[in-house]
Length: 192
Image 1 (cartoon, rainbow, N blue to C red):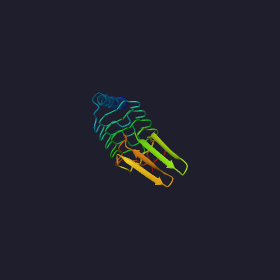
Image 2: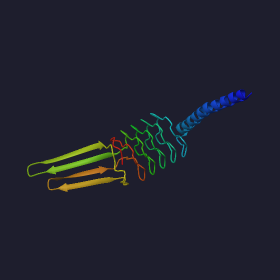
Image 3: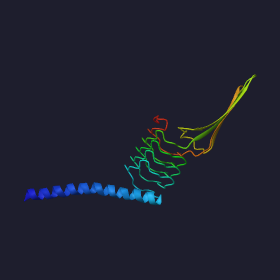
Image 4: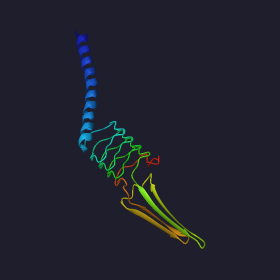
């Protein structure tokens, strides 16, 4: 009788574990479906969710928990990710142009090759007694200064030989107050 009861309890525990795991996956999939349909899921728990290549433009995930989520190649343009937990998340090759990441936790996240939407406009002018040169460049930047909270930045350098002017005003992701400790940045370097 004891062996029979032990077998029943063991079977019940095993079924509970299996059903619990599938139940969590099912619940997680319901949340993802809700997010994709409504573009809203503030504060939701999407830990370790696979969202590879997903179109998440204009979604509201403010305060959500995406710890360990795989967002590789996801499109997060204009997404509200403020106060979102993205610790250990894979954001490699994502588009984060104009995304709100204020006060987000990006500790140990992977942003390698991510597009933060920063565009630099460079004007260079140099001259000497015999010639003058002027150049104009429009470049996508792979990194930004995370400690600079200005939405429009410019730099003007002038010497006897010429001047250079640099302007950055187009669509950078807002990382004001974000935790970037040990984060792999778009250029592949680990942030201290």
